[in-house]
Length: 267
Image (tube, rainbow, N blue to C red; front, side, top):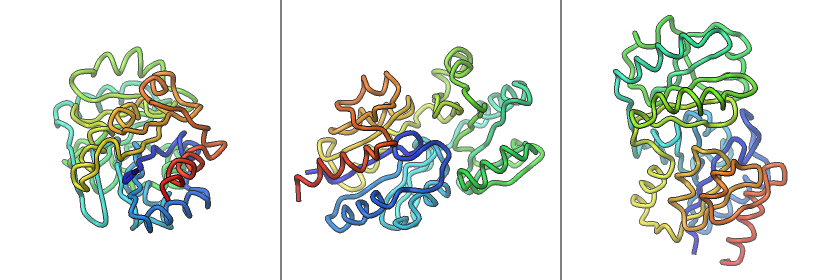
């Protein structure tokens, strides 16, 4: 019997950088909750942004935010994993040197820090992701606990990520392509799969009782931590290889349809 369902958001459940969940999924989460099945939104987004997506059921579900650096349930932080300050400093300095076409954010437990004054990027953060953020002159001078650093390039950043950033930082920090336009940096121990295992331990749920959905390389850990793992049809080849099954894309509401089909049999 399934007791825990974790789903990535952008590119898996809904289109990238959008704030709204479709009504069928909202109603399905309510039904799952009534049956004692815990739903988890698992994303590279910050907690406030994920809660906004699930605003109609925000107090009924749990959250894996910042790719697993922040695990949260009903007003309580179940896990917070900070980056080593020296690595964070070096990464920020490298990202500052990429040029004006690249933007970056620094995530803290209380929201994001941004140095940019680019209005289009700020509007995307505010109205697309619904992030909580502060504009500052120097993110490193704020002396905040840093959970994640993310760099953005409109269109695609995959080549830079896979050929430059991941080889440079792999082994020192966790670095992954998180959507076509983002590369994320976290502490080396951070992974959505490790965060899902934390929830399994907290709630006494076995791997075989866990279902997970994903599309991008930062979801491979989710696939490995769940007994029933699904890559959506639009997923990266590496994710499909890691998953046990595939399901329709977000365009066809594949996560909802799969949950209905699989969990409906257990009613």
